Image (cartoon, rainbow, N blue to C red; front, side, top):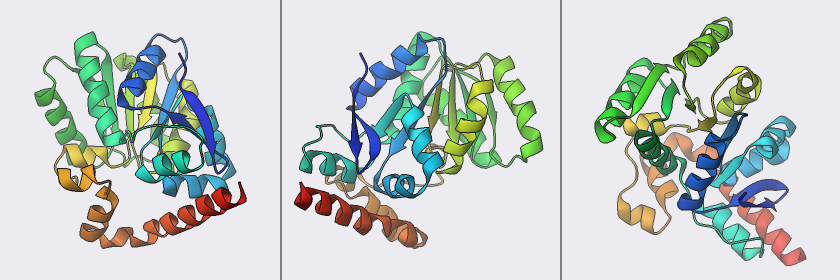
Length: 244
């Protein structure tokens, strides 16, 4: 059963919680064509409203998870649907746990060389029996991509995690997904860095009150420019609410 898909400020989003997202991923595993899992947050909504190809990529995605609390609250305020936040950094390990139980083969693409290697090590330790059939850091030139595609296909991977940051990872999926024999491709942003211990997630108390973004801003001030999307998103949501 496909999740309910809504339009938030003209940008698509699926009404799911993490359990429903995993069910959707499992259904994708049974399909004949590869599907993408993309996280949607206020920053990506603002980008997609200005970027036609990114918006088109979101529309083509099989699963659009509500990664930011901002999109969850906006959907409720506008009466579009109810959902729970599904952080991509939590969905990826959940998919890995599912893969370890069911024998799905995984490939990790992205991050620096050490980050990619350490992320694989952590996943193998956390999920005994997981089949990680390959990995590749993200510092490749365009002319090296055909070889990477061949390696992914030769590995027999069914699940591909792409950690190139947004919107680069969405652009990569748009260009190369048709050439891949995988079932599921999730864009995971900086999740490899979290797994490898290079970036710490916010303490549980910050996550519980939905202020993980604020914690990251305190410890990564360079994110301030990106966070300017938040007030613009809030203003546009409020304007739509007022205008009905």
